[in-house]
Length: 130
View 1 (cartoon, rainbow, N blue to C red):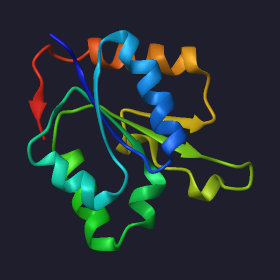
View 2 (view 1 turned 120 degrees about the horizontal axis):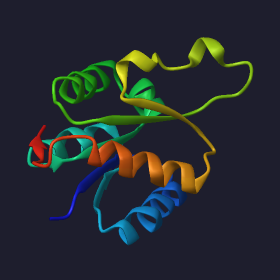
View 3 (view 1 turned 45 degrees about the horizontal axis):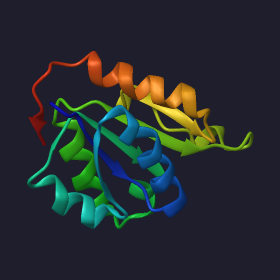
């Protein structure tokens, strides 16, 4: 049975990169490019992992961003938050306790692929709806 990964990312190059990393691992990939599309997709989605560009939540209107955060946090689906952090952005760093893992971009492909594989295999085998 294939694992399902839901990606919330607005950078088309990163979406291509994620797909090229995850398809060889036989993961089904679905993505949304903004918070509203993510909220709509989550209505019928069963995911084993969510990869979230945490800046999209911060940039969304407050209601939509809060709704997405509540929806994701109320599920048992692991969440990898990705962030682009410059040396001067320490006050902007996401709180790691809110996510399964926080990964800074750019990241090494082998590291990220291994992280996804370990995160998915360490959870129960049945997909949980969000």
